[in-house]
Image (cartoon, rainbow, N blue to C red; front, side):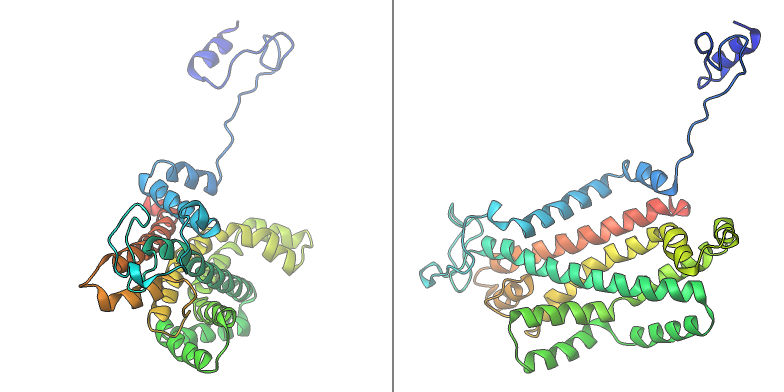
Length: 322
């Protein structure tokens, strides 16, 4: 082994002499194994794995998704099977959190209420995400009059408080009649159409920064069109903050649905919803607090989990906050 190979093997652990005939073998050109640089996503994942709060939030979110998809795995009781003989019954083996004022299983109603609350939140987040992405990317990339127009639309929508505007629009929808499906679609549409502005602003700023990068100029010189540059080059490098905002917004949409249902202008019985359960139980909380506490806890933990998940992802992607 030559002196160079001895030093390389001792001081540079990534460079070791290879077998005979290999590049690092004596008498052959020497190469050093260079570790592959990590992407921003890889760095963020490396940071997230060290955060216990991220794993706690992720487990809660995964559990909520599982409950919404397969509620029968968590309770065998029927939330619509109610008997006044069980009115305000105490917790027992048949109903671990007792019964509400109508004699319904409190735990079963909270379990089955997860689906509608999560469906509204997810649907509204998807709608807000699509609108925010389309308008934010095009405004940031093309600029000029289109950017000014989108920015003014964002200002107008931001001037409408989410809950207040939701109350006004949902009042018209519920007064017009319609089944639970129509109300569900209306909730998703109204919350999505009112909640896309923050996502659009965030991705617009990311696109404005990304379009100044060298790889975008190189793509232009190679003849790539605007559509290809936006969706194949700029968007993948601008998605991280956008995903964070949508994740946090999902929790806000779930809370907004519960608020509207609590006020009687969202989902209505016999639909299962945490907001409906809280509204029904609040008048009897002195007689029995569990019908109020259980759905409130489900709601609070779900919203908190999504907010914490989005917040930890944001900190992991932002080098200044690590």
